Length: 575
Image (cartoon, rainbow, N blue to C red):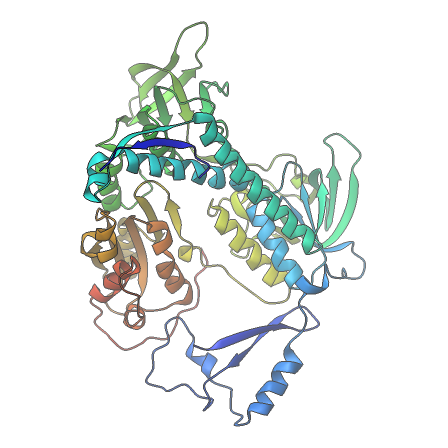
């Protein structure tokens, strides 16, 4: 274990084969049951029933012959493809973060000759300054928290005399993980033959990109299609002076150069919550400064209330809500960090805090400057590049810019690494000749605190607003981790799962989970939403016992759907 924690123990169903035709479009050949038909009375969770039509031949030989005709060697085995006539590349991607990487891999799979431009290092924010190193720190905080909980350890019959940590060892664990994942991503691109072009990418005209050093002449290349995937940077409000030592952003905090005795965290969203988990586990006192009237404003209110009771109230955390930090001055000349607070509504002075450090966790801003957007008549909106539901860039006249797409944080639709990757794959499907619209309501999100929080779809207030506008009722179902055998075996019974749905047709509107491994459990719900699976179908799915997945099993089984007949699967809705 690289976290360098020291302690002393005192004594005592159908198979789908995807193939690719010469034009790069995909098709599917399905190996069905021996009688070539699916019994009509069976319920297939998430599978379109029309998938079971069209396989009429009674001869296995005919089916195998068709498979042999359709199957092609994918581009991932044969190297980067040959570009379309008149272009250097089929696809050029500006930005090699998680979104750009996912798009590049899928493009090669589709037989597209692909290049990716990166001005910094492969992996972008997530791998180098975001979700990857932060998970390393959170892994340490989780173990520290468990070892420091004497009551929890005694319940297992374990006796732990002391638990400590080496700050540099913890920091090294985070950096080593980031380096390992970064190398993995780089090697995967190279092994597939993706051209990695080093430098800053700029759009210089329709289907033309220049890359190279800032201020240099650069190299111009042409591409049939271009994807902008430049990501984001930490947002720092006016009046905040960041010195990288005592007033820091998440970029600095992930290096863990110090563990301050008292740190203010400005913002109580995902970033702020996760760092509060890390700092308090390592011994810091934390004060939240939140502009809105409640902590964790982006979460479902019921989940947020429970999370506050578990993650904040028992820990060395206090908070100020409904206030702005109008001025933050770094520590210097022996003086502490000073933070001036005003009332968010009246703008009257409220308080001045003097602390050891301040972490600015007020969200992220798109990194879209210097991309040459003016060369294709595109104007950003609050820094974000405007796109339609297919990630196609929209110019200042409201018209689509041909062959130009933008994915990930730079378009602002959903600022999550896996959302960027999904958008990139969706774009590649389109440029390969297959229309595809991503349903953003099916994309899950997670906060990796201890316990974790996860969610997909609508919150209860959002669902009620939608129901009122569209004229339907909503139902709420809940299950507790306290009733789950695996959770009780781990002595981790704190937590709930919440389902928001339509009782009239069984549509899943949202699922929210707070508890052990919530980030892993959410995917059954997100996949159900993505596939249009209704509650009356998924409640027949079988879950291994005893596992945490039974929390979700019980959740779906407890929902009361008026019409228990399977409904036609709805098409994805663009958001």
